Amino acid sequence: MSKRAHLSFGLVGCIAVGFAVLVSTGCGDDSKPSDGSSGKGGQGGAAGGSASGGSGGKAGGSAGSAAGAGGAQGGMGTHEEGDQCMSTADCGMGLSCVAAEVQQTPIRICARPCTSASQCGSESCASPYTELAKDSICINTEPAPFGLCGAGVTAVCGGGRVCLYFQQSTVGVCVNLCALDPTKDAGIDAISQTCPVAGQSCISGIVDDGGANEVGLCGVEVERDAECGLDTGKLCKGSDICVPDNFNDDNSPQHCREDCSKMGTCTSGGTCTVFQEITYCKK
Image (cartoon, rainbow, N blue to C red; front, side, top):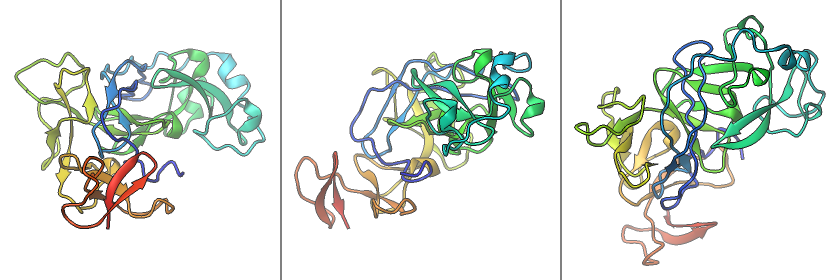
């Protein structure tokens, strides 16, 4: 499945998984994954986390000769930047197999190692996944809400947003976390009291904050049969499920469909259909 395809699909029910927060407030900023969990039926397999802000680019500049030494020539493999690897031999020209973390799980990805930002063009040189200088890579700062982020695309979030990983994925989207009750302190950095984008509301059930139900996600709730996707900020209301029209087409549109897993019948048309772990009303 393409990194950019069907990213909203995959989470059914409230699943507790570790979430990583990747925030960038400027060139060279980085942060380390922390504990958390996520989930809401039909809103996409995302994982949310405690939004501790960037740690200020510890690995920038004097990143250590080890990172750059092996990356000058890179591998001769077929893996692209952000792909998981076992060794540099797996990676393409100019890329090295570098240590990273996703939802507190150690992995290795093909990336461009660096010792200074001058090696990275318009990007920054940092180690946002392990905070170790030897793991410094050229990293992009994604400026747009709901833009792709994470180890799989070697990008962190700008604009005070956090990277909300999709379930069992190295890719997430940059989101604004928000306080479901602005009168309470959720105890998480980089959380907004109100959503910064007009038309958005603070939606519950996406970010699992350990049962406290204090942290929401800024987005737009859409009705059944409307087009949806966490990567577009359009989330299904209630228990409806955001599913692709065609699971075999990476570019297929996604729409909110009725969850028929409990009753086995569809109340607003369609045929109750089972696909992998989800049951929805197919139209």
